[in-house]
Image (cartoon, one colour):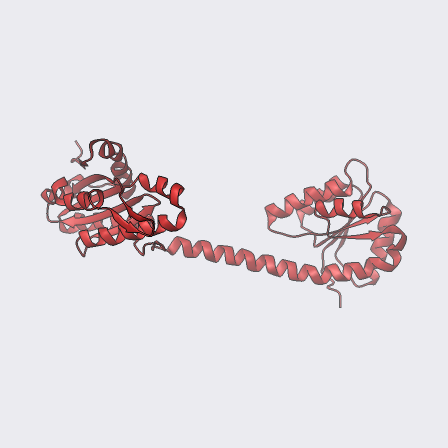
Length: 321
């Protein structure tokens, strides 16, 4: 049975032809039929309300059926819709068909057999349109669900550590903690610039192997309550809460610097040494309010000096004047 509410748009500059097509479709049970006498008029109607099936003459003045198809596909992309396009043509031949399919046309009806084929072809389009629209809705929902999961995800899948989103969340919690209970906050960014070169040289699998090895070693070097995160392909982050700012000195984290720079990593390609730079920012409640992103950016700005000097480069946030 046809779907009476199937939206059909007939585009033909010949009024007689449009009338004949409309009568045949109405007789077949279709009720939502619109007409346009040019491609430009059809595009305006589609912009107002998308059509499920577009029946268009291939040869029209100003813009032919292929150009119309290209324009409709662009509108479909913007509106997350799919229009089933059938061209009416007196042309034939394999080259003609290939050209049309390359432009995104779904089907043809030869004008010489239109009386016999029009309704059966629209019936077929009717069935396909229901499936296509359902698949597009499901795909859109799936995309939205994936985006939602990514927004909630706090774990780096390669190392099992927290990710940048987790770091921002923990920084916010930690700033609230020192504001209400005192103490000090230390945030370290650990830069590993050679990891990018290693990935280019050995490939993605070894890159992941190194990231996991670095994560394991850092996990052995930090305190159990410290927050260790992987920020991106060559940066890790560490958040630590201490009793006062004296616990945020570079010497407090010397073990991290030496643990990364002085001991090679065993991998499937043999032992690989890396160079690590560390930027350290620290503050206590007297410096608040401070945004988590300010801490992240301030620490990252210390890395060039850390790479050059081979030392942990510190920055202590001061009380505003």
